[in-house]
Length: 205
Image (tube, rainbow, N blue to C red; front, side):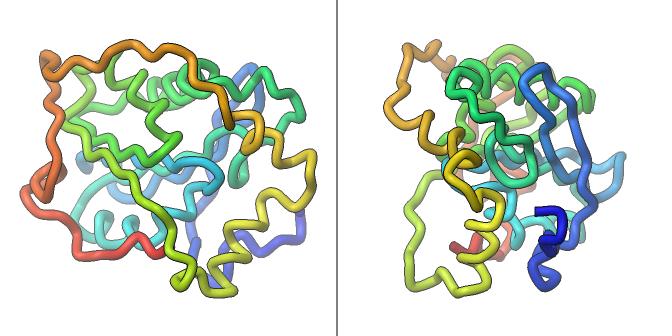
């Protein structure tokens, strides 16, 4: 995988950054001005940060700081062949550790699908949150061009590298209730969750 073009013909031109967790190294990108209001985007299963490739440029252009991470087992993050490291709780704890290392304030969290594990960070650190923009949808296959399909499949070329994707299926332990209101943070949906309007971009497939 060392020879793989991780920009995928320029569609993912972002500098890789790394966070070292006890379970393995996590990859993330951190684009835009350091003083910009943070927008944190967390992908689901079995995608990776590439899902948000069309969100990053307009948000950065609008002055936001954009953080997109890869969960363990996905994207450029490590892929240990040990099912026990892919429980929801372990994903949630690693996401919390990474985001706390960045010392973010006034952030908007944008989780998709299994990226909802990041709500663990939101619940335990409401003082860091401005709002939530929660996503879920299905991928329409007619939008999966050969280039996009190659980018999604590239991080997991072997059966062993897919342990994180497959071991998550069927694991649904009890989840702590999410408060409807927390001090210092609000759960907002719709076009005003980030800045009063939503960026006019499509997530692609």
